[in-house]
Image 1 (cartoon, rainbow, N blue to C red):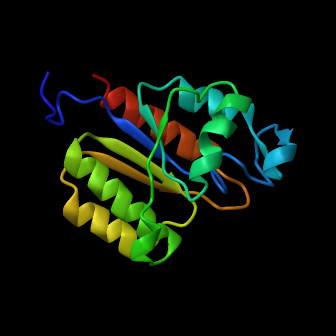
Image 2 (cartoon, rainbow, N blue to C red):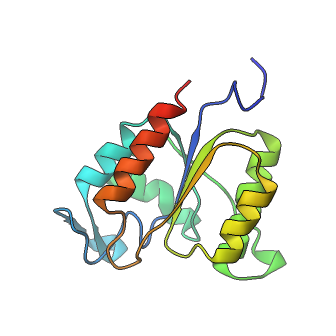
Length: 160
């Protein structure tokens, strides 16, 4: 199997705070005491049901897999390590990691984060020539129904 975009499953680059953990989700939530927030099991279940390969793209690198162990539905992901030595904003570090991951093994992808800037969106559009969906959530509410539907539709359209 080659590493061409056609041969690699689409990815879901997923942040934690403001995406999975949100204080005012429109979905029914469950408290996560250790993580200081709440998550919506329906959101997690629906993301986990897509054909997307989960890649945690978060500044909470150490907590991402622990979080995944505490909630059902998002267990088999990997964590992208951010290069904190290069400095820059959180979103700049995440963007560098995403671009590096795509350079190593291009695939279609969904990127979900509450801190996506217009500049980050522009860089993704210009540098990554694969089908992509960039979803910016509201940090207080996390993913909403229309955003989830668009992710599910993208996943179905790009399933391998």
